[in-house]
Image (cartoon, rainbow, N blue to C red; front, side, top):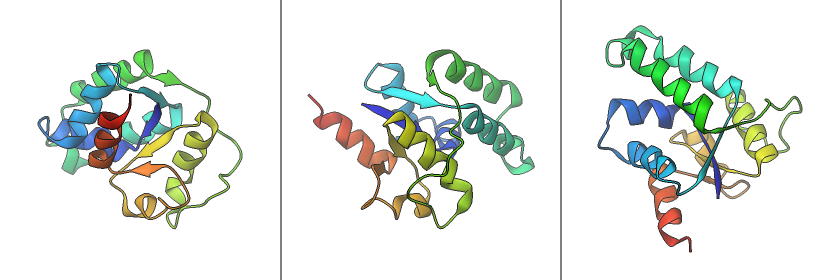
Length: 137
């Protein structure tokens, strides 16, 4: 199984190391699924972790270490140039939909706009994704 993690899931994993998003990251590191990322996804993560409210809780070095891990261990693919066939109510999420489509991957997100597309796309909350992984042969 392949998955694209919304940067909000990666950030949540850093903020709450014992939480469900952190368990998704651990499942990836344990080989339970293949993580797909792109330059745009990593750039969004870096942009968000530089916001003052997050910078107070996530050290720059910790965020950079995670970016380097993702760049090294995730399957990096080129950012799609075509818009996705299904669009999000939040146009800022469309790159994730396009990335997941090109990679033939599920999206793991806590974003209500993306989760609202679940009848059209393979998109799961972190908890739903962990349950899906537990059911996989």
